Image 1 (cartoon, rainbow, N blue to C red):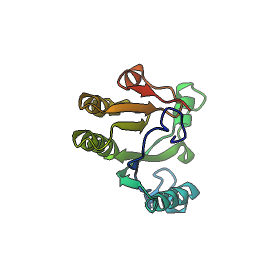
Image 2: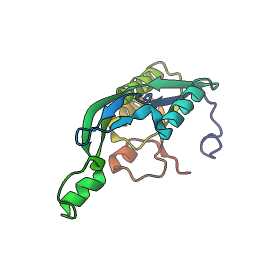
Image 3: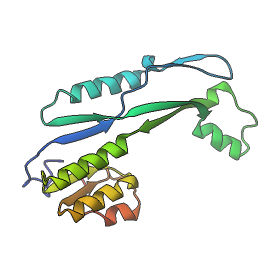
Image 4: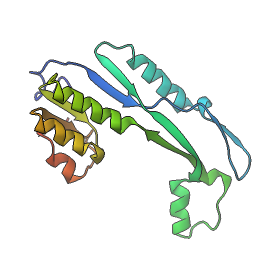
Length: 170
């Protein structure tokens, strides 16, 4: 990002990274009684390593939310198959943990507000595709901060683009 032509004139204040530490619970599938040990999953181990590594980087602040588990739900493939009538019943393999990240959006919004109110930065580069950030973006712009947006080239709602000063595409 910092090597982008549109950003090279700016000095970095800090990189804020928002994520939730992975859950390390064991969950029992209600249909067959099998136990899913989340901490044994390779992706969980990798996520934990990444967060721990980023916490030690210079000019980096890791902001942690929480991951909540609400039991089990039917996975998207099984849901689609049921709707298309390609599948007649639900099997244990069709269930996935129902996980939701909490508090991350609020922490992003609070940091944007703090940076804006204190005029710590002239420009905030926000990397997101989440339209929940629009109120924080509008607030920063009202405070005179230039808000740049990078969506990682994912399709996003038009309104998200409307409330930015510059769309960075790399």
